[in-house]
Length: 497
Picture 1: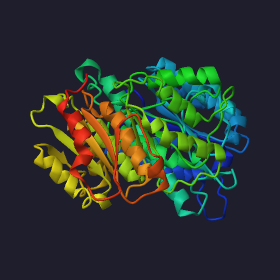
Picture 2: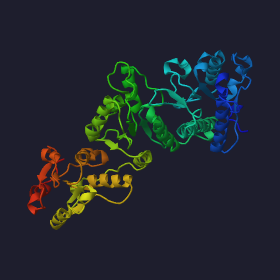
Picture 3: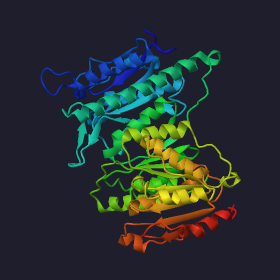
Picture 4: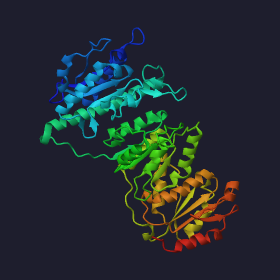
């Protein structure tokens, strides 16, 4: 076996005896299963054998064996399996204390922003009851709160396929992070002969959310870390108002992207606050409202069905107000589409583009619902006859490609004409908000002209529609060339800076 120099063993699992008792005859204990799976997965990731051990001679009373003290300086990583019994066990708590003491003498407890202790929360225990040595660690929760009953369900002890998938996903998180820690320790021990490569990833803030979206949040964080990015927050957020907001500000400082997942249930309301943790993180992330502010991505699941009136209010705010701000992108897609968008956003940041006004031939982006492609034909032909280049929304490609093309058109065009025909009122609001978000996509000049062409079919919402942000053209009958006279006149004027 190839241990991490100068240690004799890579990993020691600290646990309470009672947590390894099988629930039914013929089953293996939870800790035994975890130990076996973790060791195999780590060996697969590292490509070599390694030592993962635990004291199998534990008795029910968990009295501490002083002989263990001498082993801790030779252990690279401690895995603590937290449970109610763990907190009551003098044996477990002393193992934790002795490892912390030994780690301080053997290179330190933390390497960069990572700890050599990995907190596995097998059974729900309130954070304030965690040992002081574990309070500042995020931990890996091997349970999920049932939204219907409010009760935590441990992974793997539940026969549901979802629980089994969540167990393996969480174990993958633990294994990958330990494997990264072991690699870091080996490079650090090698010293100047093998210096650490410079970090090439970016910092991404993945906001804490409700337990119902924990699997999705963990999935996003896992893929980001595997791609070399740093995922924040890297420590638990305090649940007291002043400390909470300060911590969020510190964690957001310098990040390249923040991601906010908004689900169906209302998140916890911290002490001294009147709104949920979701809303507070959105608020703090949006404190800097400039075109150069950090990009913010807000995700709503496609099957969103809020049951709480407060959550319905938050979702309405996100859709109608927050998403209209510069630097904010609102997505309501599947999880895989979200991850693809995030990867593309980080891998290919929007380059700086020359002002649209510098293009010799004026460009008009004619935005329409796919159902209106035929209806906008006369408008497209008229603008083209006037010597203008006309771009229509793309109709082929996946959701990410269509969105990328839409944003590129908003950056490159001189003017935007939104054709409001078959599209819904919500569709129109989203397109108008996109105009405000164009600087966040890379636009460097104001639009020369902006207009909304209100066309058939007639609806009460169309009759009420008005805006100060764009010229409004109403014609529920056949298109007439005179409809666009003022819009075209606006195009002849130079764009304002």
